[in-house]
Length: 290
Ligand code: SF4
Image 1 (cartoon, rainbow, N blue to C red):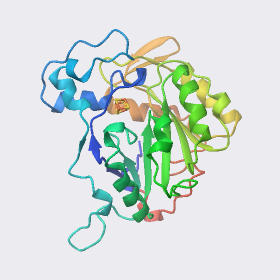
Image 2: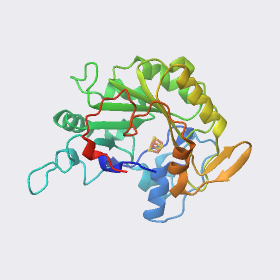
Image 3: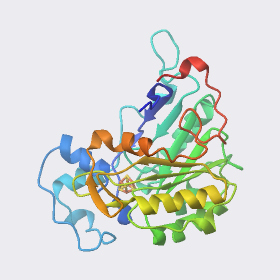
């Protein structure tokens, strides 16, 4: 699959997050930390994915993932190389805060500096996903106005309940570039009440990890249909580890989850650079790599 990673950059100003909804159950940040972190035994999970134990009640390994801390790359967007050029070259799409949630309360103290960097680097596109869209207005800077032109926000929904809670809030917010991220998709979702012309993309994906809940291709196709009916760009970005198609369950290796989704060839109006056609990126032809 041609993923064109050369035009993307990652910026994780802080790391660690607290679980707030069913989609967090097998959060990849926790899984990655478990894999590369202390390796200490995990505490038994609570019976409901919405009822998490108090911080004091968690095992040590969970504390390491749920404790939010600033990273050494906090200032990455404004860091320069020896020759004084930016470390993140102009024009890149910067995936922001993918090892946490940008609107996490624990990071309130640090976020203003991030907004400032986003303002300063108006030559970059910053893209963050959040499950905390209900905190948005208390997190934006005073000069936010209708939104910064170079900030894209993805509101994550994993099931109907979360869609019905988060998307009415999302719709009401002043944001220049809005996406809906239906991932990890753990049930069928009817997004049709929330799909208007302010939504620039719906991106759908299954869950990864050994315990991943299955994603049914019928749910994916249903979302695609809803998008096409409203002429909204649609992207199927990954199958997840357990994928149901025509009633049969497939186990998909991590290394094939993106490519298998791409092979399905069901994206709609996604631009050459795997961004919606509605977002006008001005990359040179030389930025494009197969
Ligand atoms: S909000 Fe995102 S980063 Fe935070 S725990 Fe949930 S899935 Fe993980």
